[in-house]
Length: 236
Ligand SMILES: Nc1nc2c(ncn2[C@@H]2O[C@H](COP(=O)(O)OP(=O)(O)O)[C@@H](O)[C@H]2O)c(=O)[nH]1
Ligand SMILES: [Mg+2]
Image 1: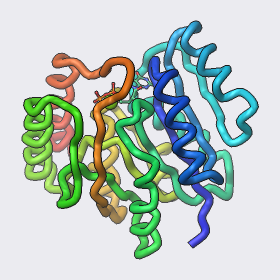
Image 2 (image 1 turned 90 degrees about the vertical axis):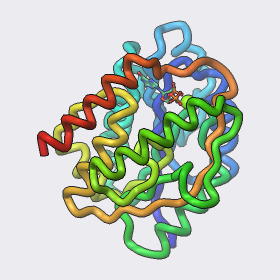
Image 3 (image 1 turned 180 degrees about the horizontal axis):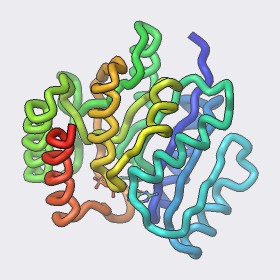
Image 4 (image 1 turned 135 degrees about the vertical axis):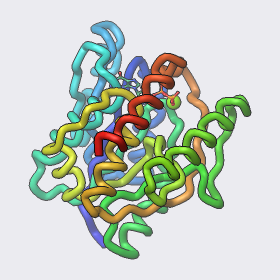
């Protein structure tokens, strides 16, 4: 099925990774509109600006202040909707954790039925995690098993940032109040869509540890995120 697709990419100090990612995207989804929402400071941002210059299908939104992965994606969603013909929106990390070669799994799933959110899951059969310490993988797995029973949503990966959304889902998310700002926005968004009755599916993905740069998630954010999802269900 022919659909118009955009790809929202949050980025913070990812110049090296993004130049590789853009090549991958142009190979696997050359017609997609790419929206990068960058929070790097002036120096890093101007390097990024040079990379995307003259690339007509790429829009760079520069916020210049680190304001969280989640809020960056919502901003990219708003930009996507400016195109009245946009049908579906991908969300993916800019650090090469997610592989454009796997777009087609989402596209096939989308064509097989009407889904409003397709999550690229590391924990479905066929999913994999590569090049990262075992203890972080185990922690992420435990958190995800907990979230599934706590939130009551039949999904296996609540914190995966490789996703495909329908226009309706994106429209809803830009109109509703999203409280979280960082990576846990991913769980809030999933929970909100589930409660609103949007249809959710999953496809297996292989997740790679970043090639260059460093992770933005620290133990303080992790702890705050856990408290946030605990409160989220209680708040209803
Ligand atoms: N715009 C923006 N992007 C962010 C921010 N924090 C993280 N990111 C991006 O979100 C993605 C995931 O973050 P990362 O640090 O790799 O988290 P990890 O994969 O859980 O270790 C990466 O592409 C980051 O560049 C932020 O505050 N603003
Ligand atoms: Mg990462």
